[in-house]
Image 1 (tube, protein in one colour):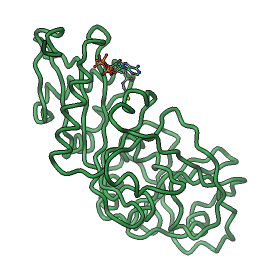
Image 2 (cartoon, helix red, strand yellow; image 1 turned 90 degrees about the vertical axis):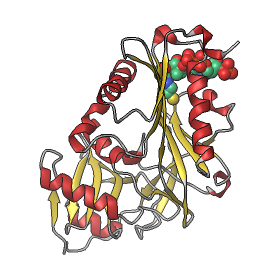
Image 3 (cartoon, protein in one colour; image 1 turned 90 degrees about the horizontal axis):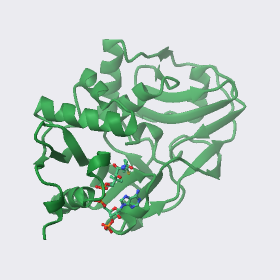
Amino acid sequence: MSELEHAPGLTLRHDYFGDPAAWKGLVDLLQDTFSIDIGIQDRFGGPDPTSMPFGYFDGEGCCVANFSAFSMPLLVNGRAVKAAGYQSGAVRPEWRGRGLYRDLMRRAFARTAAEGYELDILLTDKPALYERYGFRILPQHLFVARMPKLQASGSTARQLSLETPGDVRLIKTLLQSRQPVSSRFAVVGQMEMFLLNACFNSAIRLTALAENAVVAWTFDGATLWLLDIAGTAIPPLATILSALDVEPDRIEICFSPDRLDCEVSLEPYEGYTVLMARGKAADEIAGPLMLSPMAEF
Ligand SMILES: CC(C)(COP(=O)(O)OP(=O)(O)OC[C@H]1O[C@@H](n2cnc3c(N)ncnc32)[C@H](O)[C@@H]1OP(=O)(O)O)[C@@H](O)C(=O)NCCC(=O)NCCS
């Protein structure tokens, strides 16, 4: 018996983002499932063009299930790795327990395997779902920085706004030409999630340093969280701190800080989701790491 005989009347669609009604179907599915609006991406040029969505649609065109892969090249210990990320996994409650998700996962994994991806990564609050496909949890760490010696700020810092077209252009340009924020574990190129994550959390500040780096950070008056840096070169922590003009009691760096020229201590990171990986490049991932919150997907 085919797995999907329990789900009559559904049509499988893949690579359907070119159809605005189908894209809207996914936006609605994720709104209803996770209360997030990925339709915000339409303001910035639409969804990631590397997306490989697989979805089931009912007779009314409603998206009842989806699982997407996308290209997320990573730098892992100095080597550019062809990695795929998986996201937007959801099944509407009335269609659950019939094997739809299993079917979509298998299709997406077969596609990325056929395209030669050497690493698969995902974030989930349900690791058991993916362990049976060979995914393993990668423990993440926060890097607590020793306070650097501040310098007289030579660079000009400017607060950016996603409401200002010129600022969005600058951020996009820097995301396209960025030096990965870490050589140990970092995204090489990915624009859409950075912009979406910045929209989702209004506490995130985006500050341009000398127009060649954008620092994503939050500050609660005591702790500064350094979330990501999209720049043609990564400035040292002391330069960043001097330019941001804040005096935190504590600095937590949310990515591997090897390019920041600073001393750090480690703390295990307990997030709502865990980072999981599989594939032949997974063994190359070693040592303490964190996926920047701006790259979360
Ligand atoms: C999780 C979810 C996608 C499963 O969809 P589904 O169509 O009911 O799943 P399937 O019937 O295809 O089951 C696939 C497998 O996952 C297992 N599974 C289902 N829900 C699970 C859960 N919450 N935790 C762990 N495993 C689960 C099933 O037992 C099945 O295992 P098997 O292949 O060994 O038989 C769906 O419940 C959902 O949309 N939940 C809310 C959103 C969510 O959590 N998405 C995943 C984000 S990482």
